[in-house]
Every structure is written in C-alpha cells, then in structure tokens.
Length: 106
Image (cartoon, rainbow, N blue to C red; front, side):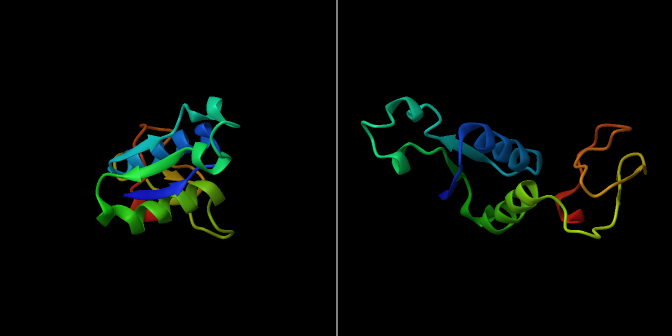
C-alpha cells in the first residue's frame, strides 16, 4: 500500500529507518528515478513509501509525523525500558544502552 511521497531520497530513507525500528515493514520506491527527471514528470520521480501491511498505516503516519516535526513543546521525558535511563523527548534511542524508545511512549 502506498503511504506517501517523500520530498527526497534522504528523508524517505530516514522515514524507512524510523518505521523499521518500530517493526513496520515498508519499502522505498523510486529511489533512483531522480535521474529521469525531465523525461518523466517530477511527481512520478519522487521517492514513495510503501507499507507491506496496510494495517500499519495509522501508526506509520504518527511515527513519520513525529520524526518530521519532533516532539511537541512540553513533551515529557521518557524512561528507557531496558536500563531505566531518563531521556529528553527528542531522543529516540537511549544513549546509555542503545535501546530504541517504544513507539507507544510518544
């Protein structure tokens, strides 16, 4: 299922990494079509994120929004489930042990 277009391959790959870290299977299509720009319309050359399972759509959109905009002002810190370290909201991985924040932690 096509989820969305990315503004460029770098951001598209970042989004893929964010979703993969949350256990969401996805693919980045059109990553090499930028070289065809001009011969193919620009909107058809943009990188696209595709989900393997459409049931992941709501969580995927939430995660991409968070990755794009960062945490909202006043978002509380989170506690690492592995080592108990308390981290500021903008961090998605524990600096102490390397464990990724649970996507449901906000």
